[in-house]
Amino acid sequence: RDVALLVHLTSSARRLHMTGCQFGAQAIANIMNAAARLDFTSDELNRDMAQATLLVRPEHFDTQAISVIMNSLSKAGECAPQVLTHLHRAISCMQPTDWTGQAVGITVNGLANLKYPEAGALRLMRDAAMTLSPTGVRALDPQALANIVNAFARPHVMELLDTQPLFDRMADIALELSPLKYSAQAAALTARAFAKPTVARAVGGRAELVIGKVAELSETFPAADWSPQAAAMMMLSVAEVPVPCSISTTRYLNQVLLGMTHYQLGPGAMRSIAMVCAAIEQLDVCDLALLRHLSHCIQRSPLSIMRPMWVRSISTCYVHFKEAQLDLP
Image 1 (cartoon, rainbow, N blue to C red):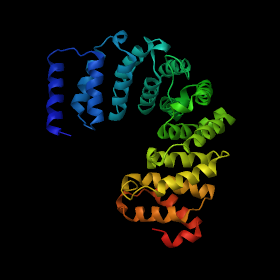
Image 2: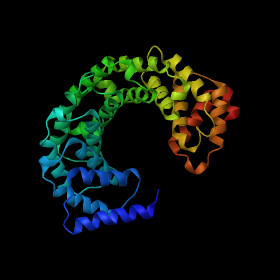
Image 3: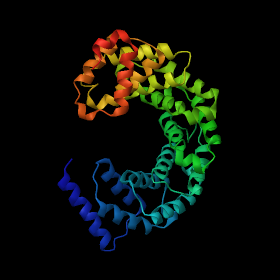
Image 4: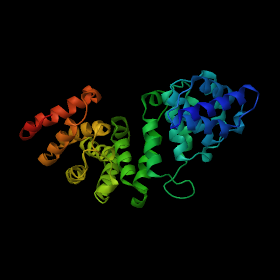
């Protein structure tokens, strides 16, 4: 990324704001989104765009602008209370049917990250999500569905809102969605969302049905479709919420991981490797070839990146499989 160019562009945006130029909601969203996606931090820009947001009348926002601004504020990690209150007013101007699944998930996640204390905005978001369906003009895709479930499962949200109807609705939609709508990543995200203890308890046996559906489907995706993260999420999900195909899915994904290079399973994949270790230990699926392969990948990574939780998951896995202890990194 060109930092000098980013500084110049953000300075231009700030200068326009200070000279009285009024930005529209979409323009504010585009500026904030560009900075967030490029991991460019500017306290001055964030402050000016927050002030610009307050100048836009609530009824002049649309759901996309609200969700993008909320996501950018969430990534910044802080937001003036009056800006969140203003966005709440904007949300109140929307009809439930104005929202897409993606916009709902992003907005709720942002409200949760920023610890917005008013239940009203979350209630409106829940009502919007309840109007989504598996087919039709406002059909919900698997990835957006997983994002919605994850967002509403956040502790802050569950403290303020009755999420039971929402989880029930999302489980029903997940079971109705066509298998053709799933990718390997979407299947893994769906499994991980319904494996969350709070969600699994809320929907009961339907969690097993949803995870079983996407786990069976996962065995039909070619190895090239899988990332280390997606494979790890699916494996840990079928370990935490056992389904009839837990073992076969794990063995299939073991082979997928065995085919990945040291580069693919490098330092950036260490969390995924720890998740894989936790899954195969819990399911007691020993694959010596995979354990040796992962050991070599771990030893190629710098010790400075390791987290205590990852070290614990990896080491207890190798201790569990005694025949692999010679390869313990």
